[in-house]
Length: 303
Image (cartoon, rainbow, N blue to C red; front, side, top):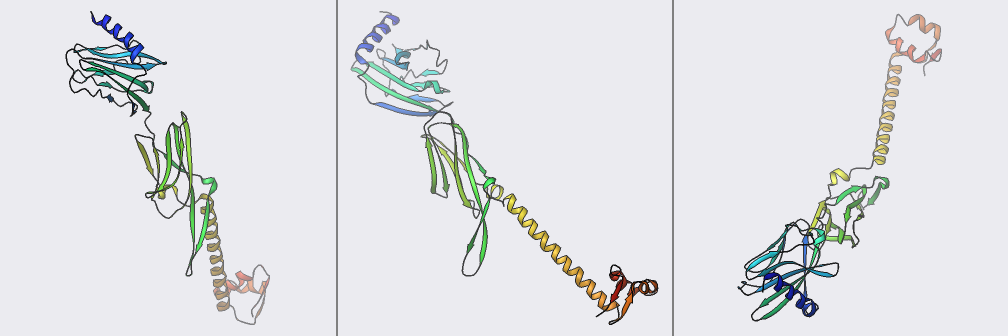
């Protein structure tokens, strides 16, 4: 009996007898682009052993790889796997290289030895690589809060942060402070975008955002110096207060200086008309300061 005839007979027998009479399904998770090996459990394939791998496509099992009389046959008529399949000639284990999402599904293994027949099933789940979470600040909700104690009162800036990921499925997005979980959200939908808010006081940088699935995770740590600076509105308010204080101080200094010079240069109790001041202005430099101050009043009287 040639190989094709034997395989056809085996497939007919397997279709009518074996399917549905398998061991417990073993779950296997793998990241897209990696390689995964489905272990046959055989220590060494003997000459008369036959090992058959099948893949469920549209609820129909198709042969994809086989060992018969220690010869390996890769049979991918659907072209789903291309050149990704590799079978170990010593154990019969199946390796899928550079695995893609379309390779997710149920794989069935039949091992025919002189001692009997063994059946195994593998459920393979292929996950897309996880993106790194992106932490941003919602500047539309800037605020500051005041905290008081018995000895002092201080103002603390608050941040409303958003941790976001795009086009993910079957993941959990979480906020942590140190090792303490603060909040989380989980989804199972395909290609969904997630955002998880968190309001914090800008006091330390021990916050981190984590995305994870069953096989991997990605973490982004909060850069408090970059994101938790004072809000633009609060900065503008602070600048206005500082400018106002500086202007008031300058006005007080100028007025104080004017009054001092006025008292020093001008004799007390004297009345000077504007025209008289103008006549003596050229002769008395000290009086010039007094006249300059009084030019807008047309006369000057010292108290």
